[in-house]
Length: 163
Image (cartoon, rainbow, N blue to C red; front, side, top):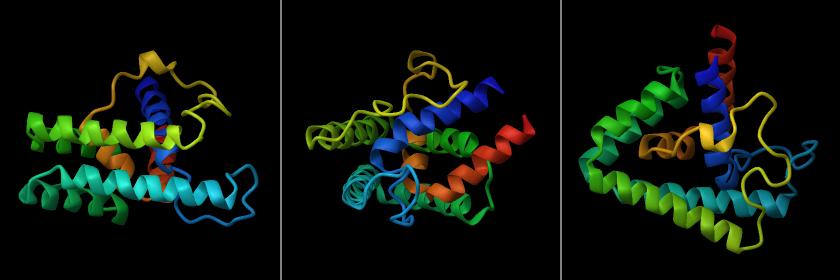
């Protein structure tokens, strides 16, 4: 249960500023960001995904995309295991480059006048505090950037219900 909550909190901290909510959603979604913010979030997420995948060798990019495709299609259902598998594939330089691309995208998003992660709403109820979640890994970043928002929520619910 603790791991599920930690992963959920990390998912929000990593993915939300780059578009955990940026995937297509109705403009009238209650509590969601306004359409202009949603568009900026989607652009930032797309840019971060392109930069992160662009930092990988062609072979690793193909392997990572295959893992992400399996998560999105439902053939894989554990984002933690997928992130660990991705982390095992990448070289140290690739991991550093993915994390640097993520950090640059987050910084750029905030520089453009967007709130930092968790600023308006804070962490979800029962989530571990930010310092207890640990630093993101390249695998976690790639999973958060490459998995459809609705699919990620589905997997998180399943992990929570199974814990």
